[in-house]
Length: 375
View 1 (cartoon, rainbow, N blue to C red):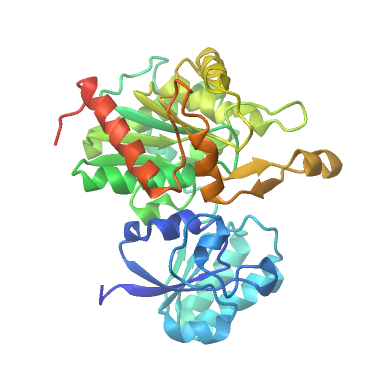
View 2 (tube, helix red, strand yellow; view 1 turned 90 degrees about the vertical axis):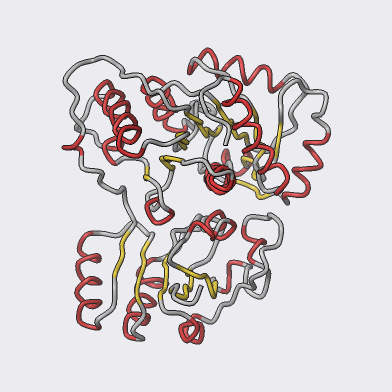
């Protein structure tokens, strides 16, 4: 580990927890400190408190200035909690640069701010790495000259969620770590803009581009995956799909599940993990959800994950905002025990044994199809 850059994360919160739980994927860095603003209720506690999962073994600090002595690089993370960028973050980025620290930024910034920070970094002789916004995969490389969908011959795993805050990124990283440890070569497209930092592709920027028609996006995504298959020659392709798969109701639309629809038209999955918000599900709920998935997107879920967050309907109706309540991951595992009569497999990715089962189950199923050679 000696030559890895020591990394401070600020403001540490739930958004960064999946990366922390799979920190071996951060090849160039060693995470040495986590700093969080005082009012967020994380300081002095184990970092696992952020996502209400198992302990991680690092205590969160609130002392940004003194923590700078313990790192070479400061990574500024995006956050689920709204916070004033000018007030809380910009001054700290500048402080870190003056302390001769390299900067990695995962927060979406205005181009003016990026320009300013780059020039200060140049002046101080430190590195500035920016992963905010949508990574622009050069749209020019993708040529669509007909409306045919090209077959993808590598087995494909989809990670989809009922909505936001369903532990999707945690599932994507857990699968990556576990399946790689079996010796398989993975190509992967993830739901966040900084996946390149973890060694795989972010969801491509053309999918967010309003200059392309929806038909064109489907064809481009198909060619994008085909290009990855050709260049990287993987044993398996994992695709995480941003957003939810359908509206909750007329007020909370989840972008109508457009990405899920487009990706499911572009690529046919061989294995699907469907992550749900925490609720009191009846025994037949998973079958009902599967039927609805089949009618909407044309495939079934092979297994379900229950996230440790619940949609806060009360606040949603009172304040008209998306709001979630975090549940302790242990409580989720206990809840899942009550679904043992269900015909479907229901797991909790924050439970390490379940994360292993997900990966094992995916590989077994793909081997059964004969799509993948057993290592």
